[in-house]
Length: 333
Ligand SMILES: Nc1ncnc2c1ncn2[C@@H]1O[C@H](COP(=O)(O)OP(=O)(O)OP(=O)(O)O)[C@@H](O)[C@H]1O
Ligand SMILES: [Mg+2]
Image (cartoon, rainbow, N blue to C red; front, side, top):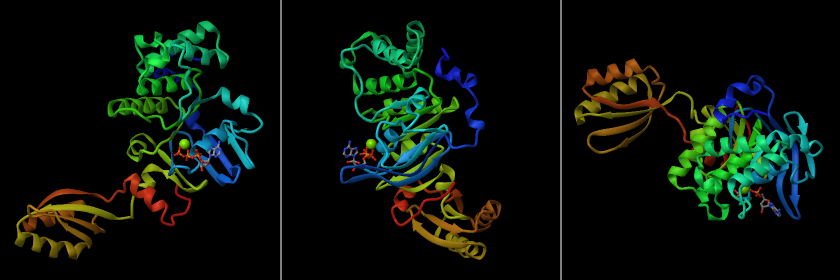
């Protein structure tokens, strides 16, 4: 048991990231709630790192998290967490897992010191260690003197921080954060994302379920997209968001005649896929095959126009998410 600040634990914990085996995998998992099929022959291999778990409401994200913790039983299939079976070895699995549930899970008539240290003791720590570690994790999540007040007096943002603190009290190597920024204001959100990044940098696997794609884009290295209980897409963020190969966005400013000359010259060296007038003598192009930046800048200079922006065409996670529901299959890496 490490009795150190989360950031310091980084160098002390076992080197999880050197292992190439998936931290979590599901094979043909089906979970039913009466007539509802929450997970439908769901198969996925989740690597180590900060992972975004995405999908529309009712997709099966929370069910997958609960099934991995052994909190709901599987009708079919198998989930393996660090090589352990979620149905048979859930007690061992829980020793090394932290869980921040989507809904309120806090005991209102306890202070956060009492609650978090209680959770530490439940996970096997001595009272002394649990108290010491509690103060460290409460410092880490940014709870000050309020830690001695009853939780029922806390704001939503403070409750989210306590939910995170109780999830990391026992220094688990795998964390499930179900909608961690839910109900938080923009500053609180940013701080929560920073905390997630810090935890991820400490060689832990953090699985973050969120509806807010921009947040996932900011913190996650890998995304898993679920819909109707099935995997629709998974892959490294940079691969998912790379967009179509060899497309570039180019924004150019210049007078009418110079622009016409430049467009003629540009069309000789690459394919102009799309152009959009942006006013003020400015045009935004999507071009293919213009990765030779020097050549494009030379053409601009020769024809008397100015390049305002020039970069590879990159998708947003929202584009990836939406395209996943237009017939995109599972895949990517
Ligand atoms: N305990 C339960 N009893 C009955 N149905 C359930 C139960 N838990 C989940 N479901 C159903 O299973 C499906 C998947 O739910 P789940 O909560 O896993 O989705 P989710 O992706 O987490 O959604 P959200 O984004 O709204 O949190 C939904 O149709 C939901 O209504
Ligand atoms: Mg959910």
